[in-house]
Image (cartoon, rainbow, N blue to C red; front, side, top):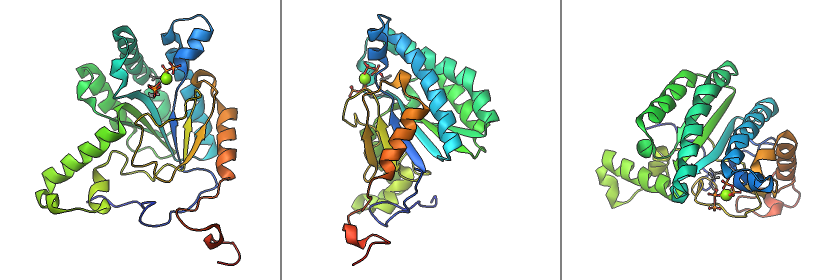
Amino acid sequence: MANLLPSSTRTIPDIPSVPRHIAIIMDGNGRWAKQRFMPRVMGHQRGVEALREVVKACRSLGVEYLTVFAFSSENWRRPADEVSFLMSLFLKMLEREVANLHQNNIRLKIIGDRSRFDAKLQQTMREAEQLTAGNSTLTLTIAANYGGRWDMMNAVQAMLKEHPQLAQGFTEEDLSPYLSMSDAPEPDLFIRTGGEQRISNFMLWQLAYTELYFTDVLWPVFGREELEAAIASYQKRERRFGRTSEQLPGKQGA
Ligand code: IPE
Ligand code: IPE
Ligand code: MG
């Protein structure tokens, strides 16, 4: 079994001043394009540039894990031409950016159900992950055809396949190695751009004690400054994990 990372519901995790793990719903691409009388897909294209800048900023700020939602399990419901644009953009992005990520010692991972992607995209994903597997400055995880419910269902199925006896009952520790983010600490900070205040089936399990930050800024214009504002907001939060304020380390009257 993989080594288990601390779980926010089982032990009290360390509270880093700069988030170790940031999870982002990159939303608002379509509206950004629409405001400029451009087709929605131009917003996705600009979105890739915003991601490049945010990756760079995370790396220089010392963030260890950045997980971004690129395509949800519900995004197949969009018009076919937008979906196919997104697929080809994904492929192009991988082909174009992976060498650069590798040069910058960034590890790329992809989570989600890949079986629905075409063979070429699946192969490019595998190659990108293999090439960058040993890198250590930042782990960039792209969630593609990902859904939080899918992740949990998939984990339960995989666990029971390997350990059928656990159908009688299992613990969080039994299940967590099978979740797709099992090798990363739980996110400290969640950011959603684009003004909506919802989780949209992103990391349902892992966000249990994550600090949530919502901004109206649309993803294509989100950059280092906005990221720093989100981190500054995070730094003002009191992360209690169920305890009272007085019980926190450094507080009097515990
Ligand atoms: C997020 O931007 C990107 C994806 C879901 C792929 P949207 O395309 O959802 O942009 P809005 O929300 O319509 O503005
Ligand atoms: C969430 O954005 C998914 C991604 C950013 C990839 P959506 O734009 O699809 O979310 P909803 O449908 O508005 O909740
Ligand atoms: Mg949207």
